[in-house]
Image (tube, rainbow, N blue to C red; front, side, top):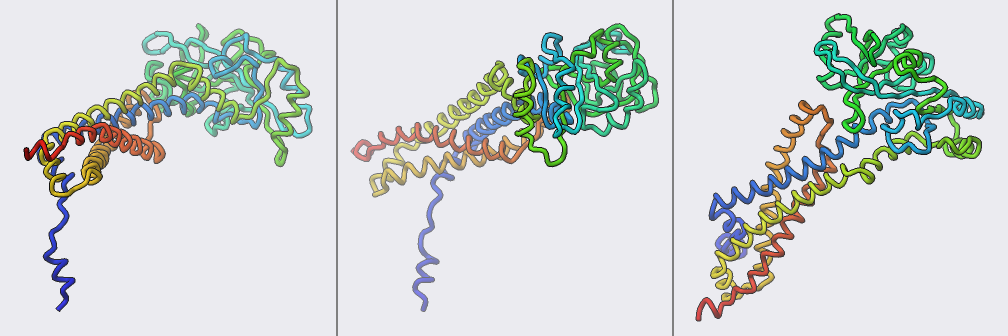
Length: 399
């Protein structure tokens, strides 16, 4: 006879004390899970919106066709390049072209202009980019496909991702309607569409025109450029060319890589504007809200079951076991509260994408980060709640 098998069959099974305590009062458990889910939703929303805003701030930079970028020393973000006092002399770009490692150079012009909604006659600012049709500054097939249209007088390309306040331009254009309106009180035609998307920090809409049309619409000279875009020959050492240009060009121009230009924009909004602090504060608030809710639930649970904890102590269970019970309850709340918070965040992300046209997407890094914060939140609340266990004295219960 196999006595080990019989003993295993009739041996008392471990009682899931943490789960039983949490599920003893279903209403309180639901409140706790709703609190954790709400805190997770705040964490997901704040971090997701922050990252989406930063992504939109640099998406124009990411589509620039350049290895190196010439910028004014005072430029810290895309908004700065729209102002005349941050322009560069066109000859700086010509000087950079003299290096043998440089394959081509292209100017980029940028300025704020007033777009008149052709259906409401309301003016709204957007950014107009001027490009040389022979050397398009953007690595966008839709732009290169419309270079001939850009050469026509008073013709622009319109961004598909512009907000609806500019009018139903995309829908009407796709229906074959000729779009005619005014930019800076000058009559223009929409000759094509492109897909890029502006930034909530800079503008809700973008236009692209030839350099000559840009000059007509803004009354600015083409001798002053907003950015100088440099493309290197295959195999050229980018760091070496950058160092050579820094040494060769005067100090009224800064030579940076395109990646540096992207990081410059992102760091500005993260560190030099209130935006980064506001979203960081939102994450902290969500963390605190969840911690308080979980603490109240665990503390109440420990207080209500204090006699039971004292009984367990009296029959030989150690404080370590009781602490593990509370922390296991915190783990259960973390996982069960995270699941609805995660899926609710996906719904909210979709609503934000549709309403605000912000590219808020769930990423694996963010999902793991919020899960880790949820465990930290619940374990921190559990660590505060277990202090009540010191009052579970068997002598008081059985005296």
